[in-house]
Every structure is written in structure tokens, then in C-alpha cells.
Image (cartoon, rainbow, N blue to C red; front, side, top):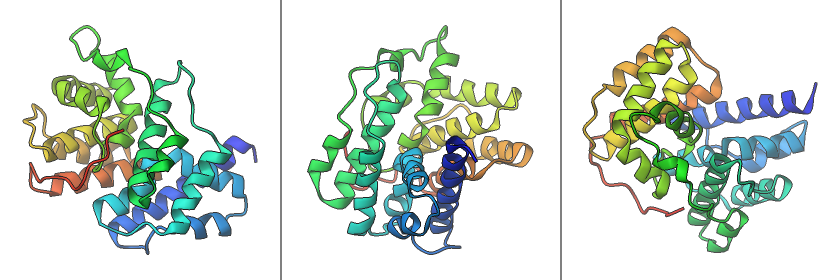
Length: 245
């Protein structure tokens, strides 16, 4: 098995664990045990980096505590796979910094923010315009892990300004049968509705259609589960303490 295949398989396995914790069908996500029990430690650490902020979903959405040993695993994953600072990978830099910001907040150790410094200003985030919405939606789909509680920053401001573009992106992705992208964008719409935003598209209907018609792997199922969490909450419910990326 190639390293890429091993990393993808490990990421799917970890996503299933996070899903189980969110749904209540599994126990708490135990990152330290997951890595210790993995047949390939490096692949397990890569999985932690691939899921990024989503590994914290049970802690952010259900209030589960983050054990110190699990926080240490996330920090170790950054040691094994350092944060990207490549200018051609702005989405990766945003995701890395969001993971670091949540790690610092949930662990109570603010020095951990430094494992992934804030990326420079990303001009592409401001392209939620009629002539640039499709490319902008691709970027926002890549940034779907930031559509969670506990974060606020330039990406979230762009989402608030781009409600119509996100709705167009969902419709376009469904028509193109790109259901993983559709569900990532639905996740942003669900987050926006949770904030109290008025939406031109019903994210509940879009989510169910994309899932029933397209199905998905564990990571897309996780996007759907997080979106459903927001959709089941009363719009405008104030979030818990927010970490600014």
C-alpha cells in the first residue's frame, strides 16, 4: 500500500471515530489511543492533520473535554507534518491555523497557536462576486472545516458576505453531481443559519438530497453530521467562547 493510500485509509478511520462520538453511537474520540493502536503511527498522525479542526467537533459541539494526552497528539502531528506556509496553498494555511487556534483554546495552552501562525491576507476570499462566485465556492469548500463553533475570522466574514454565492455553489455542485462539494458548502450555509442569517436556499433539503442521491465516504458524512448539528439548533443561538484565528 502506498503512503498516500495509507494516509487516506487512516483519515477515513479517524473520521468514523469522530462521527461515532458526535452521534453517540461510539465512545469519546481518544486520539492518543487511536495513534497508539494504529498499525502505522505516521499515517495516524497524518490523519489527525488531514481532519484538522474536525477532530475537535465532539468537544466543540457536544462539550466533551479534550484530554491532555489528546492535545499532545495534535501537537505531535504538527511536529510530524509542519504547517504549510506556501503562498500557493492559502486554504491549507487557513485550515492549519484554525486547528492550532482550537488546540490552544481547548487545551488551555495559548502557546500552541504558534504551531501554525495566522496566514497572510487572502485576497481570493473577497471574490464573492457575480463573476467570481464559482471559483470562490471552490475555495470555501476547501475551508469547510472552519465552519464550526469556536472560530471567527476573515474566512467567516467572507462566508457572511457570500450567502448568495454559497447557495449558488450548492445548486451548481448538485447539478454537477459533485455531492462532497455540495455538502461542504451546505455546511457553511448551516453555520450561517445557526448564526441567524437569512438564506435563499433551504440547507436541510439540499443536505438530504445530496446525501440520499450521492452518498459519501466517512469524511463527507462528517461534514453532513456537523451541518445537521447546526440545522437542528435554534437559529441565532449564541456560540460558546470564540477563538479568533
